[in-house]
Structures are given as structure tokens and as C-alpha cells.
Amino acid sequence: MYIDSLKLINYRNYDNLHVEFNKDINLIVGKNGQGKTNIVESLTLMSIGKSFRSSKDKEIIKFGKDNLYCGCTFLKNGLGKKIEVMVTKDKKGIKVNGVSIKSIQELLGTLNVVVFSPEDLKLVKDGPKERRGFIDREISQIMPRYYSNLTMYNKTINQRNKVLKSNKIDHNLLDVYDEHLSLYGSEIYSTRMKFIEKLSKISNKLHNSLTSNSENMSIIYKSQINITEDDTVDTIKDKMDVKLKDSREHDIFYRSTKIGPHRDDLSIFVNDIDVRLYGSQGQQRTVSISLKLSEIELIKQELGDYPVLILDDVFSELDQTRQRMLVEKLGDIQMFVTSADPLHKNILGKKNYTIFNIEEGKIVDIENGGK
Ligand SMILES: Nc1ncnc2c1ncn2[C@@H]1O[C@H](COP(=O)(O)OP(=O)(O)OP(=O)(O)O)[C@@H](O)[C@H]1O
Ligand SMILES: [Mg+2]
Image (cartoon, rainbow, N blue to C red; front, side):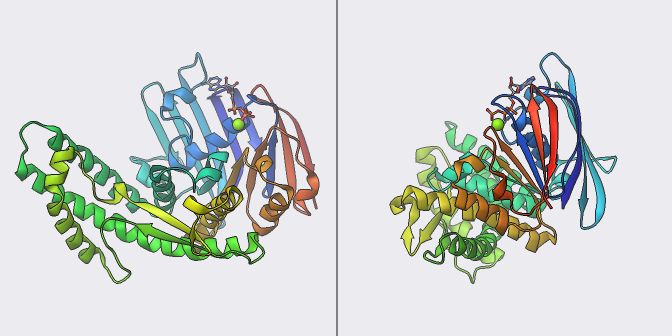
């Protein structure tokens, strides 16, 4: 899959931008605060329906303006497609191939983008919430149904917690919420388990090659509900029913729901050692890279086409060996690399590339190179 053009109107510091991209490598360079990340952010807006760095849509509208437009054309499995997003102060509209969609669920999986930013290098060191966010985002891209289960699950958790916080506990209402939780929760568990199993295999391969075969890595899904490989959605639901019932008094005491997918985590091992607790900084970073990049292969396996890869400010954080490895290993995948430092062109090997120089929300220079 690759994006061939982008149009931005009143998008952050861009008035009006139309740009055609390189099928291979796009280097977006410029000093700090010029608008490099804004360009790649707009691509994520069209991929998942929201920015990867702002929680409020209206923050993306150019200061002093009332609405923004962004649109891109791309090729997926050989077919040309178009996504457009319009944001006003209180509304957002999204069109796929000219047709308005009703929910984000219809958008997910259309334009597959993997974003790798310096925050991802901390994935291993961060708290469970960040790791859960990582797996939830990744699975949602591949399986929009997962996203709707997750939305319903989180909504029910909030409702249940409200009951737990009230002065008079309504046990009948809790029964209803418990039923919903185990219904959506068992789907979430089951999908996560399958996803982690695949992710673990792919990331181990990548990790092997990143460490010249000196390290093996594996990922284990950690939950208070004891789930094994033999469990099905139905048996997981039964286990969750029991666990929720058992922990009700405890939850009433703590006034919140303490078990379920919203409390789970991943354990990551390198040569059988928990890398979060005992790994060196370098190991933790390499594991984070392996994890993040395995998404690319996973999307290809599940959807039949490679996603687009965005490396926002992450290239300069890596040493030259890893930079070159990254470009070489990734093969035929379209990349968007932002950087405030000029990059060494020898890292790009024989690939085609275009360098876009950005100044104050404008492309001031374009340079093509490569094969
Ligand atoms: N809603 C907005 N309207 C107008 N300008 C905005 C808006 N939001 C952010 N900006 C401007 O966009 C610029 C930041 O853009 P961006 O984050 O893309 O920079 P960058 O080139 O990636 O910088 P860095 O190298 O520091 O990461 C800032 O100058 C900021 O003032
Ligand atoms: Mg930036």
C-alpha cells in the first residue's frame, strides 16, 4: 500500500498544501516547529479517524479558522482509494471514496499506517496502560470488530464503576453489567491471546536479526483470569463470569472493577529474563523496535498488503547500524521519515527517495534521489 498524494487546508500551520509522495522513502526535514510532524499526523487522522497526539479534533484546525480539510489518495491491493476528513469546531465528517461513513469502525483498516515515534522506544519500560493501548490500537487496525467490542466493554466498565461508587449498591444492575462485561471481555481476551501469539513469533524473528541471533524474545499475555491456549470464547466467558462474581465484594470495597482486560498486561522476555525488570536500556529499546516493527509483518499477513510506515523523529534516536538495518529489512514498504537533523544518505542504500524541506508550514524545496 502506498499514499500518492496529500492535500491539507487549514491544517495546523498549513494553509493549503498539495503534495505528491514517493512510493519508497519520503524524508520530511526541517527545523523544529516547522510542521514535519503535522504532515504525518494528518496521515494518521485519515487512518484511525483521530490524531495520534491530540485528544481534541478542534485543536488541529489552523488558529483563527473554523474548519479544516485533509484528503489523501492511495493505492491498496492495486486499487486506487481516497479518504477525506473535514473537521469543524463541533463536528467531524469522514468520506471513503467519496461516500460519508457513519462510524470510525467503517474507516478502520482502510488506510493502514504504522507510526513509530520516540515514545514507542519506551514501550517496554512504560506502564501497563501504554502496553494495553499499543495492543488495542494494533488489533483495531486489523479487526474493526475488536474496536467495537472494546468500546462497548469500556462503556460498561464506566457504568459498573458508577454503580460501585454509589451509596446504595444495586446488585441487579451489577448482574446486568457483569453479563455485558463477560460477553465483550471474552471476545477481547480471545482476540488478544491470538494476536499476542502471532506477534510473539514475528517479533522474535526480527529480534534475532537485530541482535545477530544472540537473543530470543517472547511475549506473554498476563491476566488475573487464568486463560490457556485451549480456551475458547465460551470457556473464557464462563471463567470471567465466575471471577466477576467472586470479586464483587472486593470491587464494592474498592469502588472499582479490578479484574478484566482493562487491567491486563504483557510480559516480555529476552532469553527468558523479564526485560522490563532486568533488561538493559539497549535491550529494552531493541525489544521495543522489534515489537513495533512486527506490526508491519502482521498487517501484511492479515490484510495482504504492507502498511505505510511513519518514523516520526525516531531515526535520529537510533545508531547508524540500526538505521540501515531498518531501511534494509523493511523491503518494499512506503516510509515517511521526519527529522530535524540531515540524514546520512548512504543509509538509504539504493532506494528511491524524495526529500521535502519544510519551513513554516510550506514545502520550500523538493529533492529526488536514489536508483
Ligand atoms: N492549530 C494550529 N494552528 C496553527 N499552527 C499550529 C496549530 N497547532 C500547532 N501549530 C504549529 O505547528 C508547529 C509544530 O508543527 P510540528 O509539530 O509539525 O513541528 P515539527 O516540524 O515536527 O517540529 P519538531 O522538530 O520539534 O518535532 C508549531 O509551530 C505550532 O505552533
Ligand atoms: Mg515533530
